[in-house]
Length: 316
Image (cartoon, rainbow, N blue to C red; front, side, top):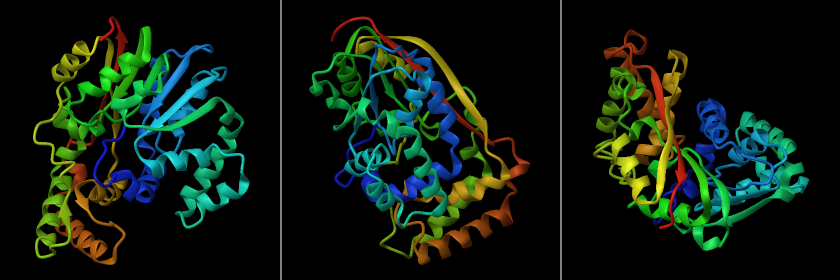
């Protein structure tokens, strides 16, 4: 589920996003739970919206090995091509894929390829934004719109109307969003509220001010977080009812927080976090934040992501 920008975020930042995702793997269990909540059956047609590097497709097959038809959709051409190569039986294409990538990520992708290539004949890939999924003309039983409510092009209802039109009666959708964009019941304990994390980005912003070419991303200037009631209102208007809601919670340990700070730069700023200038600014920002706060001294250490399961109850 990718928001379409003039320059797609994932097309530009695919490598750092991939390395971040395969290094931390914080989202793996969340995606697995989202997909398990769908209750996929062998005869189901499943649409996966926002496929990234193909791990969510793999989780669909893990949840139901006998499923025969998965339709993979993404609005990033780069991520779509990446997933195609991950599912490829062409060994040369896979070798080209992992060339120049962080060694741990390369091993991860090679292992993923070995797992999924026997399933490649059951997957079809399409370049489409979420709000155009119905244009495929497919009637699906389940839609796994994993992870990214916050990436949907506003107004988000357009995507859910498209999902409605792509589903048979009684069809289900699961989706979630990042804790940074959602007002959860445990929001006060979110790691992004930790004084150390906030101090890092305050210091990073201050150090970047003399550097005109390092610009904040308009994409992620979310003034108001999404709320449970707002999301439920959207899905009701789009012909769905809420079947289940829960919050997936993991603890972000002290050992991981510095890397998360550095990884978060690419979501907030239009820059390469591996650029030498950015690395220097980041290092200074970390030291300044450490001089002010100790991350583990505070209770705000949770990643809290909502998981919604919704059911189609009427056509729209």
